[in-house]
Image (cartoon, rainbow, N blue to C red; front, top):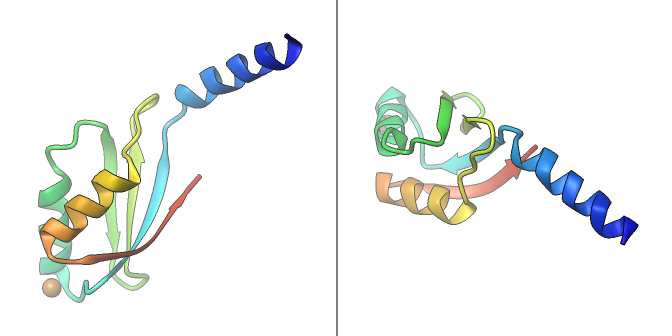
Length: 91
Ligand SMILES: [Cu+2]
């Protein structure tokens, strides 16, 4: 019973946090690639901030509090933009 209570509190506090997602993308080489990816993610209303780090080949996304973007959605959008997801890291 106590465990369940702690679990509920924990899931609640996690759900109000914003997600910070770092996506390693292969195939990205120039600023046109970055623009294409930004355009592809633009309709996603859960995204507060999206930055493309071309040196690191990373797309960094910060969502709004309580919002998330699933790995499946991320992979789909990156692929539709013409690139490939190498890895996804969340914190
Ligand atoms: Cu390019």
